[in-house]
Image 1 (cartoon, rainbow, N blue to C red):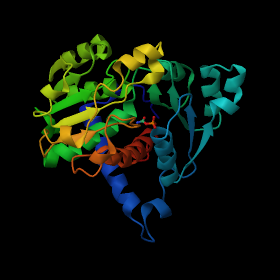
Image 2: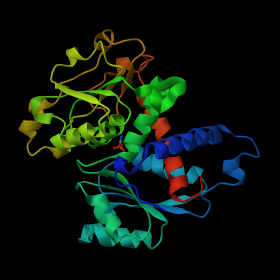
Image 3: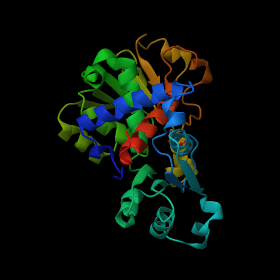
Image 4: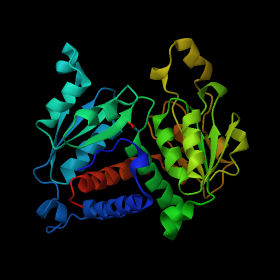
Length: 316
Ligand code: CP
């Protein structure tokens, strides 16, 4: 089994395999017949996943847990508030403890680099479920899967060349967009970074995108500049928990709000995405617009995490 720390670990062929397996997972979940594979011969029977989340989560934790359960395995979960983490136990010792009982651990932690530190002591796979302002690889994997499904057509990932993806909001702290920009860079997308000046995409991510050599990237503050050309509007939350002061947060919060009026300027074929949770960046009046894909992202997340678990355990 292999740990997952960063999207950089995935080759283009590896992504193709992951998404082919995710597609099969979707079909398998939909099959409710008596001889369905997931009920008769579930691939992860007897496997146990540990979920260790030092930060709050709805989607990532629940979709990992549902993914392993649907594949015939089970999970145990550590709650930082009621575990020995409260007594001061280190991340490394906590991961080692959990891996004494589990076949893999999905880890979310507020510190960038936490997943890599955990891998350093782990004798079984660690799956990065978000490390501070670092990366959120499984989210970006499900986002790319969704973008390819919505825009790539028959060509899939290779249909993304030249597509304009606007990453909007808190690009400084948003680990999801850090991972996603690196993935999109491989497929020749045009990346438009839309953020307040103080929340720009970090230079080191832009350098990695540039070194992929396939993508154009530009920075703007005014969302109006990108609305007509964007094939994807990927909106993010301003990450309140990462700010030093409330004042600093208030200065930039609410910079962008997608409403039906904003959407009226966007191409009919475009896709509106958000990793969620949203706190006002996309108003609920947009939810029934055919371009809204944020609920599809959540569903795809489980199929992609099922595929990842199956591949990690050599059971795909
Ligand atoms: N998108 C995402 O990571 O959501 P959660 O924080 O709810 O897991």
